[in-house]
Structure formats: C-alpha cells, structure tokens
Image (cartoon, rainbow, N blue to C red; front, top):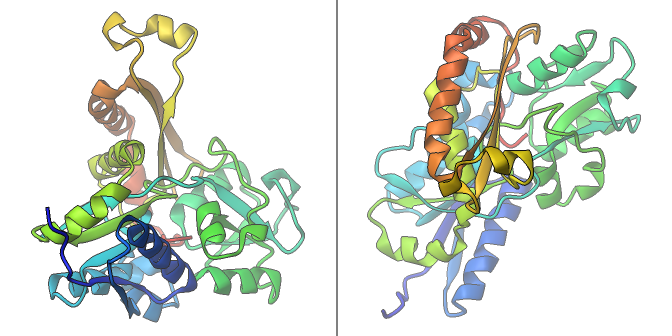
Length: 338
C-alpha cells in the first residue's frame, strides 16, 4: 500500500512531561517512516489553567484531555499523545485508541526534601502533599498520623514546592513521569505496589485519533504493545465496572505472571503453558480506615471473566458505598500524570 504524504500533526499538552512524551512518540514514528513529516500542536488544557483547588471541583480529569480531543475531532490535529491514566475510561465518541505504548515503571515513588526512602522513615505528623484520593487514602491507611495537604501542578511545580519551597515535607510521584520529564534523579525511592498500588494505565502512553482516520491508524499501529494493551484494557474495565472517577480512592494493577509451581499445578490442563495475569485491586474510604482488596490470577483467555469476578466480589463487600463516601467527602481530588 502506498504511504500517505500527508503530514502528521500531533496534539499534546504544554507541560514539559507532555512535550517529552509527544516528541518520544514522534521519534518512534519517524524511525518507522523517514519520509514522514511531523508537526506539533501544543495546547494548554483546562486542567492546566485551573491549577488551584481540588480537580474534581473543576470538572475532573477530563479537563486535561478535552481540548486536545477537540483538536482531533475538529481536524486541527491527527494524533493525541496522553498519559493513559489521564483518559477517562469512557472514550469520547468519534475517537479511538490507535495504540498503547510499551509500559514503563508502574510504581509511585517517595520524593522528600529529607531524602526519605520508605514511608516508615517519615516522622509522625509530617505534611505530605498530593491531589490524588488514591494516594491519600493508601498513605493514611498505613500512616494515619500524616497530614495530607493538597498539592497540584506539573512535575516541576511539585518538585519545587517540596524540595525548594518546602510547603510540604514530601509527596508521591509516578516514576515514569519523572523519568520521561528528565528528573530521574528524583525517582530513587520507588514504593512497592503492595504498599501504594497504582491507578489504571500508569506507565503507559495512549495514542488517540479519529475513529475513521485510517491513515493515522495505519501509521501508529506498529507502536502498539500487545502486552500493555491486554493489561491496561483489563484495568480500565475494572475501573469502569466500579464506576470509578476522579473522586475515587481506587487502585488496580494487572501484570503478566509466571504460574510456576503450585499455581501451575492448579491451572487447568488447557491453560497450562499459556500466559497468565494477576489482578490486584484496592478500594478505600477517603480516610484510609476501610479498605477492600482483591488479588486473583487467570489465564489470558479468562482475563475478562477475572475482571468481572473481581468487580462483583468488591461490590458484594460494599465497594460502591466506599466509593460514594469519596464523592461526598472533602478529600483531595485526583490529578492526572502525578
């Protein structure tokens, strides 16, 4: 098939992290087709403009993608590059995910002016800044003595407030975001997902285009990573099943696992030798005092059933009531790309 000579216009947010991610995708696409001309359209999102106060009060995480999606729908751009966790689980009509890139480190890390490497090292009563109900609730579950304060802003803003201005003693940030934005030196203290479970899609880039734009779909398809696609689709289905939104203290991680030993022995004969995936999910009250968890493993052909089973189990144990308390409580609201 003859390649299109049409330039590819990539839309993205104006932050340093968003620019770095868009340029990384551009480099990958250029390596696939050296004749491809790539242009950028940098857009300041509503979420970037409304940088004060809880994000949910301003309209939720969709504020960070709405203007960029509109650029695609209006024909001003061909491709949007998002941090996948920024995207609401319900796709905007007329748009589709053209590709999901290979997953980077899924973990959150502890960033502090004192150089603390674990939550146990934080002294009692310390101020920890975050705008994420997921992080706040998990922190309070393990350290109810901490003072959780609202901290919003892009990567550089939050680093400055913690390390220079010291408005709070510490914060949690995504390892992948720090590395991609050129601040890997501040990602030296990652936390095990068993301690702080990430949100759906953390570590993945989402490439989004118009549903009927076959040229862009064809150009970007080689960047799709099948493993990442499998796990983050399951994570997003988990969130959708629970009706999670930016108010929710909701975390989930799906990973490929080796079912050696006892796990393999318990697998059906038909599933032995096939890929298996582990789902860990966590729903908390805003204050972290109540927590519901699931931890399951299934063969690849049963991943969808595993997600539905986990959602049903959590609902039966009262997960929807916990999530409802998040909507009514004055808890910090989630901020994409943290």
